[in-house]
Length: 226
Image 1: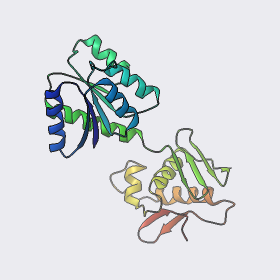
Image 2: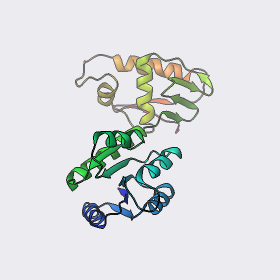
Image 3: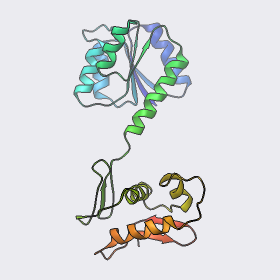
Image 4: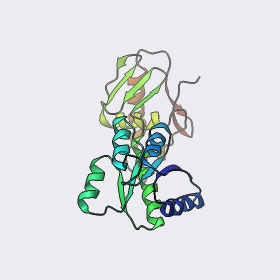
């Protein structure tokens, strides 16, 4: 994890920097608002730890406003001595992802950063999936093959989404049962075969290249490879 720390208190900065480095993370430090603004808007970081009150004519909320105004979604944790509920609400409403009050325990700071990073990564899950001439928009729930609309039932859509997210990989029956049907046991039915067969017919209709293959004694694979 690469983190930017914007903090003017030298003791706090050294404490955080030492703890982050010992935890195996890279950290840059800005000691005033101007340097913090330049680094935050000009660098690439996994997360930013930022004080509210900063010298240099720009405070933490000013930096935060510039970040969110530019479309940046970098997780920001405010680290501040301003502990009133109204101040914490103000910081969160301005675009902060978390707010930790000084004094603080480094273990809690690190745990909060880890949680922010996990949420950030989860929110970046692709919503547009494709292989060859097959396209899926997860949000609008539209599927096309060579520009032709493919109308899928809800279970077929979920099955195709899972196959697309694991394109060019062998997907076993167990994987499909657990992730598409939410079964953690084999119901000893041909439900998967039936749905795969229907999905294959819909995907490959009117095309010369099959995408959904059955891998004997293994499972299925969505691939454009010969």
